[in-house]
Amino acid sequence: MMIEELNRFEVSLIEKFRSHPLLTQIDAIAWHDLLEILIQRRFLSLSIVNIYEFVIDALADQEIKRTVRGILNEEYPRNTKGIPLLSHRELLFQDLLNLGATPEMILAMPETHATRAIRDESYKLMVSCVSEKYGQVGLVAFLRFWAEVLVSVEYSCLWQRISERLSDGQSNHKIRSEFYYFHMIHDRRSSDIGKESFLGGLTHAQELAIHLQKLIVTEDALLCCINLEENAYQLKCQFYDQFISTRSALRESLTQT
Amino acid sequence: MNWYNFLETLCKYREYELTALEAEVLMCLGEGKCQSKSDLLETYIRSYSEIEAEAFTQRLKSIYKKFQITGKGYKLPQLHSYLAEKYVQYQNKDIFFSEIGLTHIYSNFPRDTFGEEIDRVIHSSDQEHKRVDILQTFAPNLNDYSEHLTQCVQNDVQVRILLAWPYSKAAKLREDVLRRYASENTSPEINICDCVIANLETLEKIIRVASNPKLLDIKLYDTLPSLAIYRAGDYMLAAPFLHGSLAVNTFQLELRLYPSNQLIARTLQEDFELMWQVARPFHPHPDRNWRNDLKILFTS
Image 1: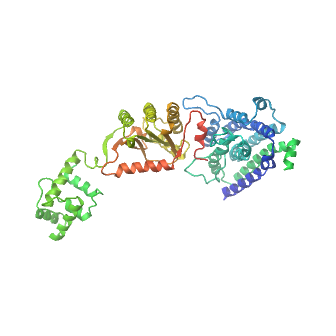
Image 2 (image 1 turned 120 degrees about the vertical axis):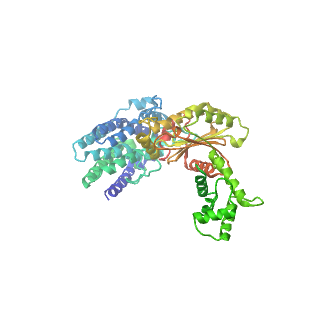
Image 3 (image 1 turned 180 degrees about the vertical axis):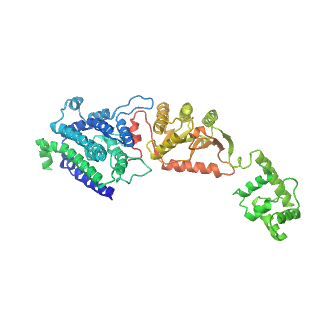
């Protein structure tokens, strides 16, 4: 029953997030502005390693640590001879270049106060879990929602525009997206919690969902989980809010549609 | 294995479809000289129960039919000599084995023999035989055949490789089983994900040098096969996935395909084809960041 309640909550939260005005009107944004959003969004991507590291150190359960460590290590893949391959960060940089950004644009763009505040706030939320009774649930819930589920939702909304210039690998005419497309797929919440199939693969969101389900044993644990997911949602909304409230040109282009 | 054990085994052999009552009759046949029909009947009554001579004859007739004893003259001596011949074959471990195409059993994977069989396929002029199939969780011996497989795709041989999708739960389950139960031949730290990716890296190298990479088909599955299969033309090695060891380190059934009795060979081939149908194609193209594609192969 508790898991069903959580599933309903998550579905409605994702719907709410999808209906953020910037994401619903992504088609109306000029390319230059879209690139700025994506470059600013990169600061959150870069911070994900610290989020993962924090959670690994703060978790007590060895099995969950192993899962989280496994996901983190995917950021820095190696071949089986141990030779490092392009990291996910490099692939993000490559996708941005292929979308039309210049290295200068990407490297020199300052992090906005709003983005910085979102990162700080995210970190504080995790710190607050450490002394909480249901902090372990909170950490897994936050990590899963902030760094996987909502990331996939963001990229699937942004994909409408990204796919104008990059392909999912099926097209010979466009360069393949090596970062956005794959994260959109393997981070996503592709089933309700508790409905993961034995066959087929698990996305990152599902890998963490399996642990989350085991941790939610009381109503209080459920409430903690819901609370952290709500917070993750608010933070992600704030990230996109900044482009509406601070940029008049963007605001105008959005309000005209 | 004595004569009576042999008869008992024969009675259970499904191809003959003997009834329980017919099996009783067969069990009365002596090993040495063929009894007369009345002696056989007497043995039967002593060993089992009273029976009318006519009913006994009917049972014998049915047995002749099932063993395809159709020569002219008395059938009982023909049946006896047929069985005696089978018995000799059986003692030579030849009975049934050759019928089902089983030619040998190795204690572990015969590396050189399989290499020679691939060579035979490469040089064969029969297009039907120009195929190599491998079904494995991961193939620990794939590097041994890297050169062979390269030559295959350069010489018109269709190669199909069927491996576990490294991120499947089934692959993880196999890994856990091997880690927990496998003998000293297997590392307790075995990581199937890395092992499959290492196989894909080997195949990537073959694709890089192959003139016609279309002849190298690779598919990955997310289920749990129970046998490893290596096939070159009409030659096949099949080995079970045991708890205690890797398939290459356990006994290998060496089979010739297309024997008179297709029970095993066809079943294995059909199961390979079924797995081939449900598995998903994967191409570790050298110019592509294929590890990302691999990760989402079954999640998209």
